[in-house]
Length: 270
Image 1 (tube, rainbow, N blue to C red):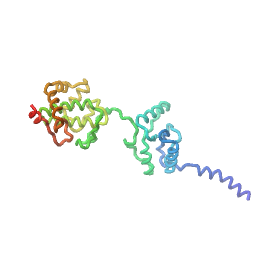
Image 2: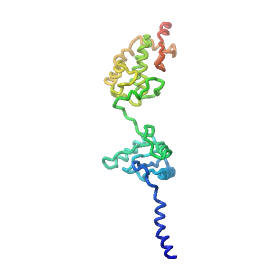
Image 3: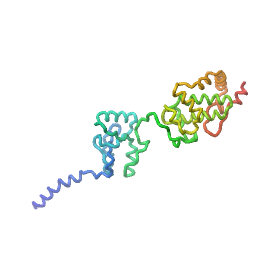
Image 4: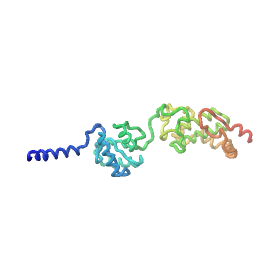
């Protein structure tokens, strides 16, 4: 009997160790750290156990080994601030991990493997774009582009819209459409325009509109826009337009296919 009990005692430590050993890591190039604030301790523990059971490597503490930092209910500004504090104490040459929303982890757990990191997963503050945008990024039709009420290029787009208004007052449908299209493209850009090269290859941005933007970027003012803004005819037509109320053609058209002007309305009102 003694030998049997001895074998059990000798074997039991190894058995306990085996039961507490986490499953082997299936993805050695991925080391995940879950940030506890906003996520909560119990949810973090649950997600950690679930991820490890599927072969993911999840770190208990944030270290230079982390390749993916996952946060929940955290803004991009908060995430970047958190990382800046961590990187200040990190050893020189340490590569910062990717800051990701919890959606990346849940999608990865559902797929059973790390899914590719996309822009929608990242918690990063977008900075001004220095290089030119890809023409393929910007749809040619206005109905396919985002048109936010607040955007990054208000001053530039308003200048082009003034020229579009003036063209509409004169009955110049071609120039009205040209400036309206260029203003629409500016509104859809994801970052402020700081150099003219950012507009290269974008649809509906011709030489005239580019020249206006270049003057604004270099001097803060465009002589042509200011001349139109101060002109007696433009100011008179603005007053008349306010009295007539909104009618087709009084502002930039909502699509790229039809252009109306208020030239006829202006003639009837004079």
